[in-house]
Image (cartoon, rainbow, N blue to C red):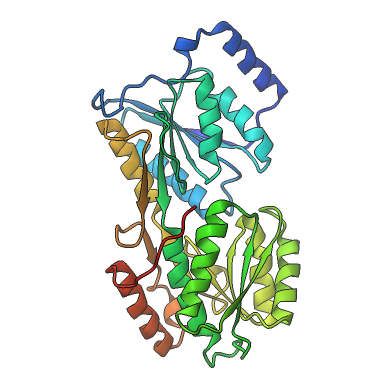
Amino acid sequence: MKSKTKPVLNVKAGPAVLLAAALVLLGMPAFARGAPQSGSPQSGGRNSLSVLVYITGMLAGSPPYELMAAGAESFAAAHEGVTVKVYEAGFNQAEWEEQLSSLVASGEYDIVLGSNPSLPEICANVGKKFPRQKFIITDARYEGNPQISTYLYNQYEQSLYLGYLAGLITLSGMPHANPAKRLGFIAAQEYPLLNNHIVPGFLAGAKLVDPEVSLDFRVIGNWYDANKAAELAGSMIDAGTDVFAVIAGGAAQGLIKAAGERGAYIVYHNTNEYGAAPGVILGCGQMEQKKLVEEILSDVLAGKIQYGASRTVGAAEGYLDFIADDPGYAEYVPREIQEKFNTFLAGIKAGQVNYTLPPL
């Protein structure tokens, strides 16, 4: 049986591809460009669907991208008329818009599915050239464009409970905790969601444990330099940091190595990473990206997607959680800390923890 899911493309669009796309554009009338609009709320459901999963980076080492691709492929396997192509665009953001334009020029894809806070602006620019193309983007907020629908994870909320756990650990008597009350956060790059929701939420959660907790925030400059991440981590540990958070893609391996060798702890956003360093990674949040993608594609088939709108999803809605049943948490985190943290997380899910979501 022929697979309905097309293979991952690991190469960037080269000059020949871009030239071919340009020739297509020159010979194609404007009204024919981009995907048909069937599947919008006005036109009802559909029986077939062609999806381009556009990865702004690489799949390896990026849990949100891996889960997005897995969700799309799982949905395609369960629905006869659905096909999926996954394209890895690489890390050069300057090339993304031109790549995406070349990919959608043929009108092959009913929707482009992505997950990146910077992607809506790129899709808006591409959409001007292809006015019938539709884009759906998770982990982003963008409203008012009739070609784009976005879903924003409440990452402030996830950071709030991970920061609370980090605060409990740094104030504990665990072997690598010290009296400095100093947490660390290493990021690949800065972007609005990170600066306005993720980092502030992490510190706010820790301060709910003790207002004197401080945060050392460092930026690598890319998503792949594990050596730079290790260097940053080492200097932060020297300054008293004993618990880290990290959003750095493959570069996070440098922090994991340094924390294991030097004696520090890590809490992780979005995915189960306990097995990468048992006893070092003590807490893992969970982003239900696969679940959300499957539900999005189901809504596309049913004609229920609201383009031009954005939806925020979090723990109360079941799209963010914490992995507590893994030995990396259950066996390495003291029972007293687990009890306090589990109570706090239950309060988050029940809407009993008051906080103000900052603007993006």
